[in-house]
Length: 164
Image (tube, rainbow, N blue to C red; front, side, top):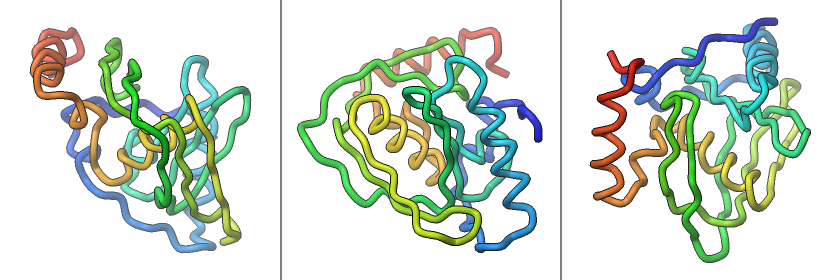
């Protein structure tokens, strides 16, 4: 498997909703292997398939030394009072912005064999589940910023070295 390059803000694949994966899809195993290798790079909490240029509905996570994946995740529950967290994104490198997130989240999906999978958690896990599911729906975290914070974020992003 391979550690894949992360696509950056501005790449159209990040703005597209990802297609579901059929259980038993031969290419899915290689995709999951790449997602797992890519998320194991230190400092990464999650990687969505479209962040590595693949428009399929899967993501990997690396939270509290637990590494895993889910295919066809659906965010089925969030709860608690949303609070502001400093959130970053591998596709918007070098920046953290204040973003409202729910303190608890739960997603359901499947594994490579088509078995049901449920991921849930609070804190960083809840944030990762919401963030990665948003990616697969074609949304970047900066879309959920308060208007003034979003204006400032876009200004800073446009001034960054990686902005094309």
